[in-house]
Image (tube, rainbow, N blue to C red; front, side, top):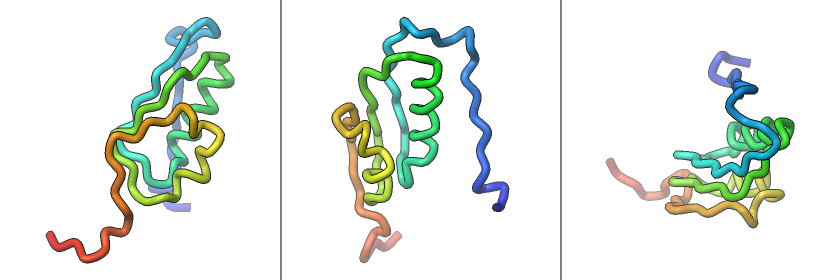
Length: 88
């Protein structure tokens, strides 16, 4: 694995507790791996994820990984990926 493939995420125990209702805001989702990890960490902290807002979803890879949360996810912008015929 390259360093690009490895992420270390922390949630401070003093910031969340089991009585918290959470809104998760993700800027960009492509594979859904990071968002899935964050949601798992919040579940282990026994918080309740009320809603997940994704500002930009690229492609469809993330849908299968996050299908257990599909009723809570609201995508503001969705772009197919790779962008076919795009010129920059």
